[in-house]
Image 1 (cartoon, one colour):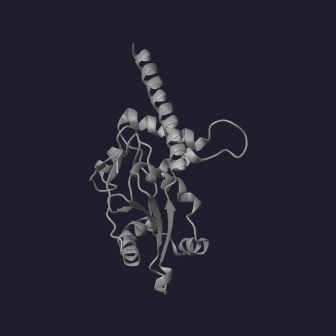
Image 2 (cartoon, rainbow, N blue to C red):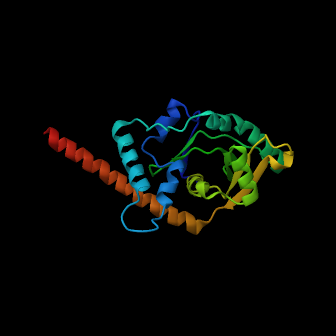
Image 3 (cartoon, rainbow, N blue to C red):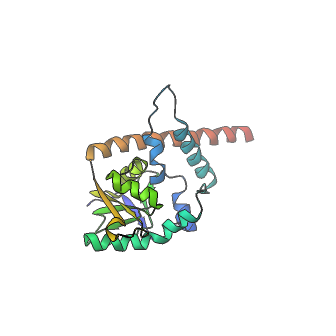
Length: 220
């Protein structure tokens, strides 16, 4: 498989990991590119805010910190290893961890929750509260909130599929603790996403240049 990324072996959420992400479109930002306006015209606020964030990160070299914290988030992080063990037991596939995959030519990258084989498939793993996990079980499909992230990570990694995994060990019945649904790679979809990504990054480049020229002129 021809790879279009460089895999950096760093600990996720470390300072090195944050530095690699600065100024790049990552999976958590993909929804901003895919968001569609239901009424009116003009650029959506989420897209504009993402562009401004990347401009700031490129000009400062400092990543904008994610403010999401709390006991629920920490429990999700702490439960990931158990989720992977449950997935491995059900599927027979061993999960590997990745640090950060940086696209070789675009200012984009991905921090995969996990992958199998030589990036043959990837995982998007969640350990939510019990009510949310139950909703995933009953829904039987990938939640809309994570489709953008999955598209992005499939594009960066080149994987053929992504398994969305939800895990909650608080359920009494072990059969209810793990939910897995697969998203197959769609090349047409990937090409459309790449076009959106390239267009957006061109706008970010232009904005960085505009700001730099403006500040240089003001200082002269």
